[in-house]
Image 1 (cartoon, rainbow, N blue to C red):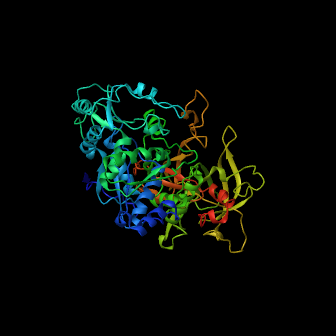
Image 2 (cartoon, rainbow, N blue to C red; image 1 turned 120 degrees about the vertical axis):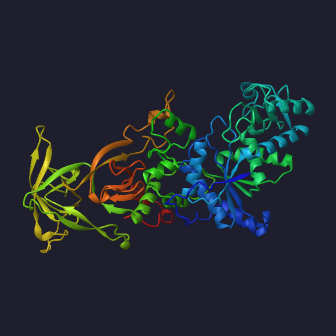
Image 3 (cartoon, rainbow, N blue to C red; image 1 turned 90 degrees about the horizontal axis):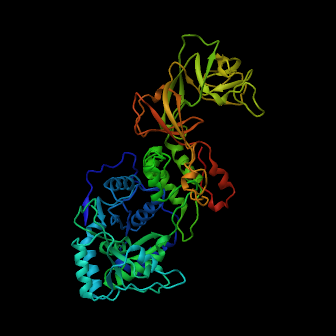
Length: 585
């Protein structure tokens, strides 16, 4: 029923210390009451049951945090179980990615992994029991006919003409289905419940379908496969799950899960539903995310624009940031949509404490300091992280020719522009005060070089005479800068709700053509050879992470998140009790 996962090493940046649990909520209150009354003998056994038909996304992170967090809080256990009942859509690649994601987020499943496919024989035997008890039958209707006879919310369904076959005939047909005698789709096994039920899930749902497809674990051993709605509740029962926590879309399915375990007389887990995560500008449908991958709208499941956990990891999000985000969300029965800005706030809040500061110029403009000695190179002391005194300092080379951000200079500055412009003095971070004295332009009239003078008395960025400047800008030495590919990301979709499309259009029409911009930046030399996965704050420009495919010869960075904090503006308008505790610096 389980197998060890000894070959899966623990990711290097996984933090075994969990984030604070979500504030008290109704599911937690249910478990507290159950323990008071001695229900389940005081046991708490939850599970996280993904289908291995795609990569996990940020919505799954909330479920992982909730299920593993509750088990940890109450001294219980959380099973990682793959509900692998659809071989046409499931792959070993997805299994491996899910295991890695759960581990990275801090989910502790004790090295044991469970699969619904381990229970195929037991599920088959239970189906035969239901047939013998007159609670299930083999139906020869096609899938389209089954749908047509199901009825509507206001009209009852029609009974199948095969509904009253004898138990003996049904057992024989079911055994022949198991033996692989019939073609795909020619027969199904259906539960015999109530075709007039107001809950459409109880109108003789399909339990098994014929599918001659190779399974990623069982191979070709089974030509029939249980439907998710049949396998799910019984898998929970086999494992002895006490609290089966699902998202709200499964609430209408609960009576069906209850019916199966009650008819079989087996352990009855308690299913509890909560609100799923919806995030602005974010697609949460695995089917649609798969389309983005297969049609090459993105560069794979771990494209940093994707809401997948692997994509967020590659972009530079930390497991601590995602756990803190999930902690702030809360748990309720009310479906809603969360601002993407809150997730980015949590990422900034975490990276602000851990990311080393460096200087990088994304759109370089050449600056020549005319009165600086030609051959002089000074090493300027720079702080690695003002939030972490233990991070220490580093030295950054300073020379006659520098690069600054193109946006930090205006030949004809607008009002309230305090950065470099003709005749204006500014501070170079960790360097000197400089004053612009002139510019060089190309044939099109664009400024390609700025000439300045510097004040030698202001080394380190302070003037002994006490004069002040209104702006400090970052820079890199032209002779010492290293080139690096930098990928700048925006939201993958232009609309808050990517599914908001007009008739005849597709959600891909809402894709953002500006979601990825690739540039060549100039970086300080300390970043040469930076290891993949390393995280930095490019001062004044945002947080960046070395891409997984980066090498010393071809350095590449992904922008994790900008420094601009839109959530700070949003939370200022919220009631005090709903505000995050602090803002990132």
